[in-house]
Amino acid sequence: MLGLVCGRFPRSTLVRRGGPWMRRGLRTSIIAAKSTDKGADYLARPFVKIVEVGPRDGLQNEKKLIPTATKAELIRRLANTGLSVVEATSFVSPQAVPQMSDAKELMKMIKRQPNVSYPVLTPNIRGLMSAKTAGAKEIAIFTAASDAFVQKNIGRTIDRSIEVFKDMARIARENGLRVRGYVSCIAGCPYAGKVDPDMVTSVAEDLFRMGCYEISLGDTIGVGRPHEILAVIQAVSRVVPLENLAIHCHDTYGQALANIYASLEAGIRTVDSSVAGLGGCPFAKGATGNVATEDVVYMLEGNGFRTGVDLEKLVDVGEWISRELGRPSESRAARALMAKRNA
Image (cartoon, rainbow, N blue to C red; front, side, top):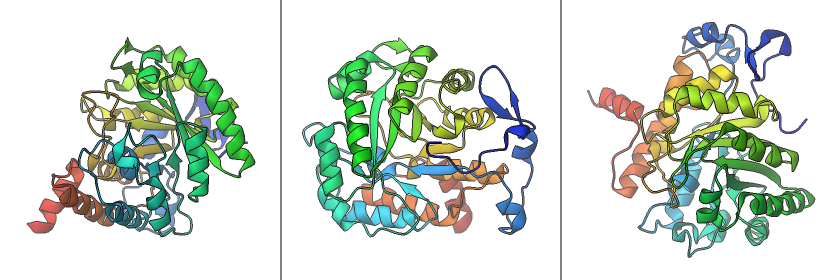
C-alpha cells in the first residue's frame, strides 16, 4: 500500500458513514487523555502528522527578498521542534516567484536531521531535475480542482497538468524520489467561485493513481466551512484511502481550525500548517496565511492527539521568524503563551 500514515485505526474500530471510514467513538477520544504526561498514556494517543509548510508556502509571497541563511536557519529551528516534515522551498521560475529563486543554494545550506524529510515543490520536469541535482529526496506536485486557477498558476488546463505530472511522477520514481500531490481550491476558486467536490475527487484520484503517496487537499482561499470540507473528504475518500489524505487550510475567514477539526472527525491524520501563520498564494488575491502551526499543535495536544512537536520550542521559532520579517505572529496560541510567559 502506498505511503501509510501513522495513526491509522484498525478497521474493526471503524464504522462506515456515507463514504469514508470513520472511527467509532472519535468524539470520546478527542476529549480524553488531557494529561500532559509524555509517558505511556501520551504515546497511546492517536498520532497526527504535521507537515510544516512555512519555509515554502509561508515565505513565497514575501515581497522583500529574505536572506538564504535566514531561510536555512528557519528550517533548522523548525526541525528541532520535533516536526518530521518541513517543506523547504520550491523549484519554480524566479520570474513567477522571486522569493524562491535561491532554491538550489538553500538546499545546499540545509543541515539535514535524521527522521526529518525536506520536500520541495516542483511545477515541471525541469524543476524536478533541478531539485534532484540539489539533493532533494521528495518532491511535491500541485494542481487544482479549478481550471481557471490552474491556468493562472501554471498556465495549463487541469487535464494537461495531470498529463505532465504523470511523466513527472514516473521520472521521480525512477530516480528514487517520493512524490506528494496538492489539490488546491477544494472549496472555492478566486476566479470561478464554488468548486464541485466531484471535481476535487477526480483530480485527487488521478494524483493517487500516478503514484503520489499522499494527497493534500487545500482550501486555498479559506472559504470552506466544516460541513463543506467534510463533504469533500467524504467524496474523495471513496477513491483515495484516508491514510493517504492530508488537509491544508488557509484562515482567511477564521474557519481553519474548525475545518481541521471536521477533517479529524472524518479520519484525516495529516495536517499542513505554517509557523506563525505565514503565507498566502501569489495567484489567489485576498487569500491570507495558512493556519498557524502553533494553533494546530495547541488544539491537537489539548484534545487527545499526539503530534511529537514541542509547542514551547515552536512558539520560539514563530516569534523569531516574525521578528526577522518585521511583523507580529499570526498565531493566537503563540500570542497567549508569550503573554503568559511575560506576566
